[in-house]
Image 1 (cartoon, helix red, strand yellow):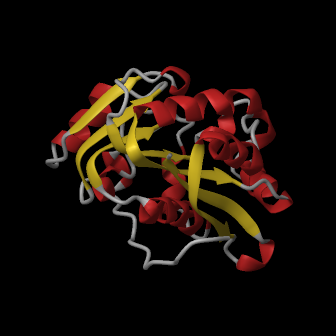
Image 2 (cartoon, helix red, strand yellow):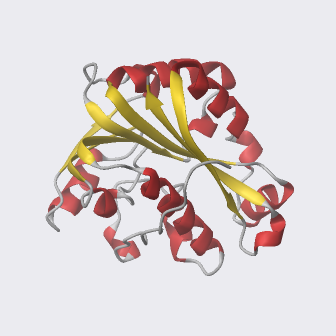
Image 3 (cartoon, helix red, strand yellow):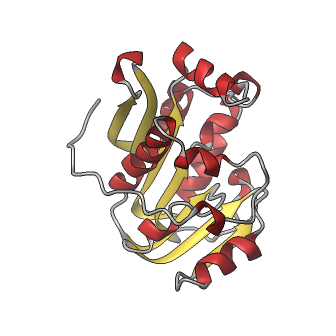
Length: 220
């Protein structure tokens, strides 16, 4: 684990009924559970803590827009791309509370944005769903749309027996959905970007070990 430790800002949550535009597989309900909800929130908080702020941020795989309230305090424009989210429903929910977003449907492997557009790119629990052979293309696209010296911040699970068991209790077999490890992800990032920080999150309670990794890299 490298890098400095800053105070962690709390994730700003609306009532669960506020979030719409995603299917029943979205994990939004888990954020309100005891114990595991704290872990879900803390992983997002650690990612947000690495975001430097600026003009424009792109969140890849934004889902319900869970991070948008915090991002609105750091960036002038919030852009998002997601494979399946209903961009009209998600966007209108935030517009109702005064947060303007610029959302699209699309794929990380072919981002529909010009070169050198964003100060930051954020991905929370997205990259593990790619095949290891797709990581290079993903980071090539991320680097392309970042401004010079722009940052990418990502969070990915660290698969441990505890993590597998917890997901099974929630009704998920993560081995059917998680194809890349945290090492696959960081190795791909290191090929074309400069490492600023890699931070690890322990479980709650902490004796189950590291369960999540947050990477912060900049465009060389």
